[in-house]
Length: 327
Image (cartoon, rainbow, N blue to C red):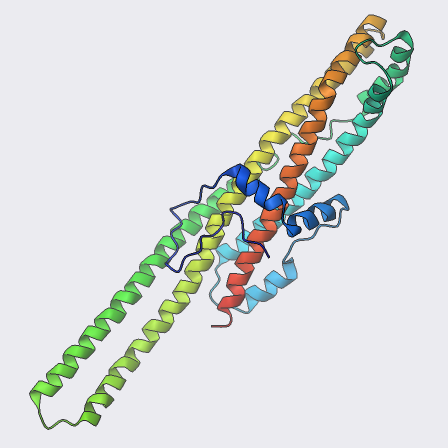
């Protein structure tokens, strides 16, 4: 699968979650939308067949097979599942909004909206009544507020655990270095103390001393595995929180636009369908038509991109967990 968007850096050094990646948003967006996985996600969402990858069962199985994961990693998978459900619900809301506007948009395609005739106004009135009865399907703003707060809190906890894990790794490395120095000192001391010691005895001493350092090395490897998982989850939490913030802003703008159209329609109906007022409403609705279409399409594209990032984040963290189970 393609490389995750700004989630990880290719590096063999220990992760540092305090340094966030800040690539060009437009560049990362273009890279994402041209991948096969993004196109597949878009097609599946449009068919209402989208599923998480990896799904819950595979994640739970992987978590049960490893001892290096923490509650925070499991919480991250829960939050991404919630984000996926909210995005799918929002996409369904957009479909309802399109359907509510469709009759009016069809009307504008068959008339001269800048110079509507009396006949055009008569055709528009029943469509106005139908549109007025439809609820504004676009959710209220801040649909993702609770989830974004949860992701932010999770990132804070993950960063704290990353810091502790880094300290443990440094401790293990200092301990290993200290063991090596002690080994050399002991070996030299033995040789100086007695010339009678045999080469085999020195080798046996070195072997015994190095055996004591093996548990430290094993502990360091386990901690490095845990560190990589925690750092990956922290970075992905940050990226997804930003994605949801962008979608929240677009939802708020689109809802306000739809509500503005509803106010115009209701105004003409409350005035007894005055011809002049109906003509003005037709003109204004036509002007907002292109803006409505652009906003819906823009929001849809960000939903697809968010799905892509959710699956990519889950997949890469899933890989880290699976890799740890083989150590």
